[in-house]
Image (cartoon, rainbow over all chains, first blue to last red; front, side, top):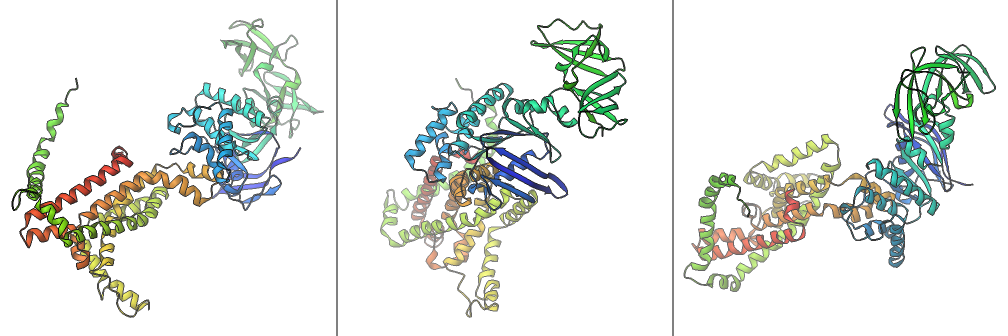
Length: 352
Length: 274
């Protein structure tokens, strides 16, 4: 498989602040890659540098095997969707979508055909003659999507495209963008700070923190096998239990915590005797007879498909447990429970 | 049934003043066109038949038609910087544009005359640096008149243009660029069309203002640049011919109204008041 996009050693600073630091990243052909991170983590800056709207201070960016260092945005083979749509307000939907074709000198008849096809693809075949302001936010973003890919660019860049929409519409459009991506086989570089959105849509996710990539991998990898404490905390809900490392061997480790002795996957940098945290997902915590952890249920919250239990462990730390609602209840508020998990389902990180 | 806002009586003092000090005398002047020296349309026939009147009316339109594009071209980059520059730069530009705006028209016209006269600042500069050997004729001709009109009218284009430009989301230009538009094409296809409401408003204001200018052509223009307002003044002060003066005023008023109607038709006054 060939790489559509490659970044190597890319750096960008604003005055004294390093926005993006020594970044390496590659995007495979047809892949949906998401840059996920909190605001100010460098993900949008990275996208802007790929688009050519900002210049890196160091490093190289290659698109389709050729360096784009000297190419302005309008010479790069990209399409871009902006958070606030950026549809041209004085043009109809059809003329908006035809704009990139017109810039590329595509003939009128061919342009008309491609525009109709693109509007069909995003489910707005009858809205061609409207002005952007006559459309809802979700419709405007669909038009922006049609406009950014009607000319089949090598790479589609999306900068928090759903950030301005309400939750329901967001979820609906996530699935639609995913469908369009699959139907067209287009390579997508997507930026979001919404971890659920990243999990739903991506083939791979790069988690950004303070200008660096913490981990890059499939949604399952990031969720089940986080490489750093930041990733474990940023993606999904996680219980953290701190203690001291007793033993490390063979990718496994044992941690002594005030609540009990725990087993987990080991990550880099764990030293026997040093302090560490164990991260475990609420749904991976199960009732267990030969249990490492004992506690008292302090709260039971019914969520429809599942029940959430808040358990106070014997040292006072709280541990959240999520069980399917169709399973037998873990216990009522106030009852004593014994908890455990398979060692592969928990991960230990060095503290500090 | 629609109810009349009872607070409308608040308009009464200003309304009365305007009626007594403006509407009645102007109406009286305009009515002279049909009643002086005797009832009928003879004054309009006169305007049509005497070449001097047609020439001055043509002059006036021609001068307005030259002043307008020059003013718009000079105002455009200023408004652009004002709209998209740093807040600090914007404050300075607004200040620099407003100071002359608050200065008396008479003072500014005399100042322009001092600058442009035969041995004035500009000519001394041009000679000192060897651009010319003889002083250039810059005053009491078209050059002087244009310089005077344009410098006074710049704010009338800068501010409406600025208000249009400030509403243009910078993301539009970024989007155009990622979609394959060179800076020139992005400007022509996206930026310029979005400035049109402000541009049309400013251009119309300049054109209409120039049509009625009196002081500037009198002080800075020459005999060949005589404009309609000067003619009206001549007719009244020199010849006591209130009839022709009224007819000329009516033509000026009609031209202004027609231009405003055109603006309303193309841009819409609602857009301008925004």
